[in-house]
Amino acid sequence: MTLRSLSRLPGTSLVLAALVLATACGKRPPALATATPGETDAARDRAGRIPEGPLPEGPDLRPIEGEGTSGTDIPGGGYPGEGGPLADIHFEYDSAALSDLARAVLEKHALWLQGQRDASVLIEGHCDERGTVEYNLALGEQRARATREYLLGLGVDPARLRVVSYGKERPLDPGGDDAARAKNRRAHFSMAR
View 1 (tube, rainbow, N blue to C red):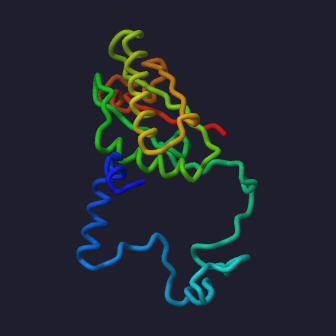
View 2 (spheres, one colour; view 1 turned 180 degrees about the vertical axis):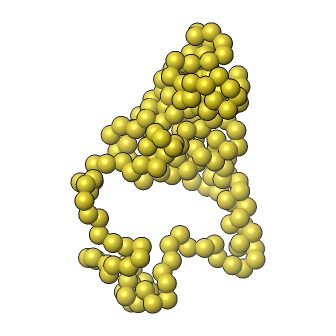
View 3 (cartoon, helix red, strand yellow; view 1 turned 135 degrees about the horizontal axis):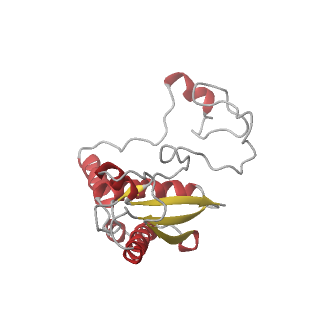
């Protein structure tokens, strides 16, 4: 992949600009993982590689114990109250356009999905209660498809992404005020293995 083709991917222009700026200033971009001064010698061999075998325990490294250690569970931490690993994205009224915030969230989702190669996602399109059933089913599908297309553009395998529209049939918040309606205009991610 060339720098030119990479720059065409959504959301990469800011990263590329930061790298160019860091290079122009003579500084290297920060490392993804760092060790504290005392840990460097214990955790790395002379060539700078992390040695084979168990690493010494520390504040960021401890053995996993208890339920859910079989390697088959998907970690939680998604939308409050729903327990999924991928947070919902939200839409404006009568729109399937992705906001800048939604794009930023989807970029994080794409990174997470790259690390969870055996996870599949059902993208659910939802709407608020205004409008007909047919209209909201169509709008929900447009929202789910826009979400899927953006994730595909970020490199997620199309075989791992399915879409469905629930329209206004499954509201997250049944209240009829503006805050409830804003919560209901969303794309939700259901996980499967």
